[in-house]
Image 1: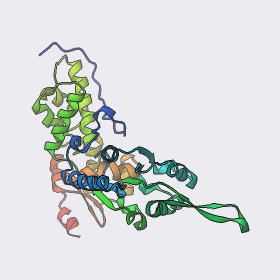
Image 2: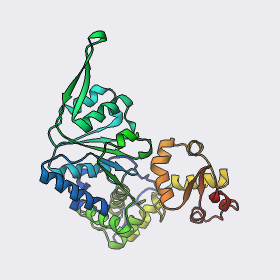
Image 3: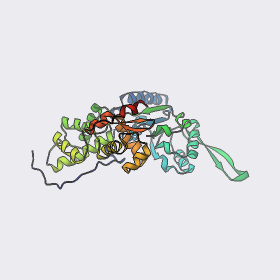
Image 4: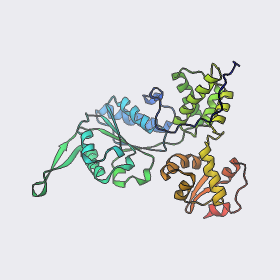
Length: 343
């Protein structure tokens, strides 16, 4: 092992934002790792639409943050050999904002709206007609002189993405012809993503190290890519020519990430439910206040993986730490836990 550089003790935090190196994003379905069933179906739908010369049916992407919804929207546009126009629902403040996008679309373009659950009612109603009839009903004039005119728009594919499918209105959901639900990734897929990203970043990584990163990535490609970049930094400071399993173990320890991929805040959530609320149940709003996070952050970022990993469970009365959650922290389960799960 090469001589190590002296580094002052720090506690780097894992960055949880939507920024990702564009070079790591797959551009076509063959490069998109994981979500096998979804990819196979999309390949059929895209090929059929291209053969007919039609626009692809509107596509609804559902799943937790970081699983590749935005990337998949771009992949679909590339596979269709179409233009890609992107916005977010909060950015569409007035109907004219949506009209500006729709009237500039070319035939076959993919129009991506992220966080589509946040659309305002007036904008959502305008979108209905655009999705079904490729037109916009626009009111001109005022008072007795007001009249509605239909503005034609070119056939396009709307791709809507959301982490909160339950709050998207039924009329909007019904207008999507294709629905894709993203699930957390398998370890083998995450390991393959690590190796692919390492190659693109021009960094060497050992197989055992790649598997450790996969296990600690919360089943999420965005997280595994962020961890890979941080391990690259630790390896560089350690004077290593490649990312070894020891570099990963040391790096994860410094980032306060454990073998299940839990960060300090994840463990804090479990501890608060156990210590302050006797293991639960506790409501989401109360829990969010207790950990100093917004309820949106709790429900969109922390809870999905904690539930998927079997560490907490939602009950009609609130969140409850499971036996596995207690065991992960080295604690004994609450005596009343079984009763809580039966309710």
